[in-house]
Image 1 (cartoon, one colour):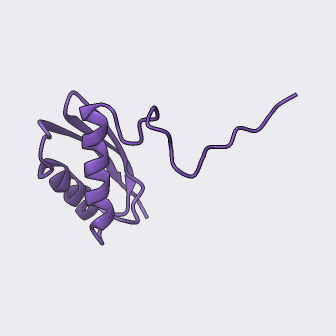
Image 2: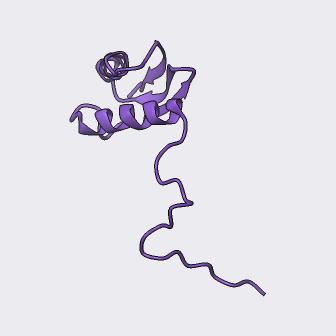
Length: 91
């Protein structure tokens, strides 16, 4: 038999509610910055960070969007390099 597990309204202190690694925090920071950008907010961009190197992957609507995402990643504090694998769709 399976029993449901319900969390209380506020998490107890033993649960970590924010990213635990610097790379995860950096990815969240970049995601937040991209979501605030009107040009990037509706694009499907995969953000991965490894050793402070940002990897952008996915298909975006234009080369302009790819360049904007690349620039946004580079301008994020803590980023040491950007690997832009974004491809513009061939609509």
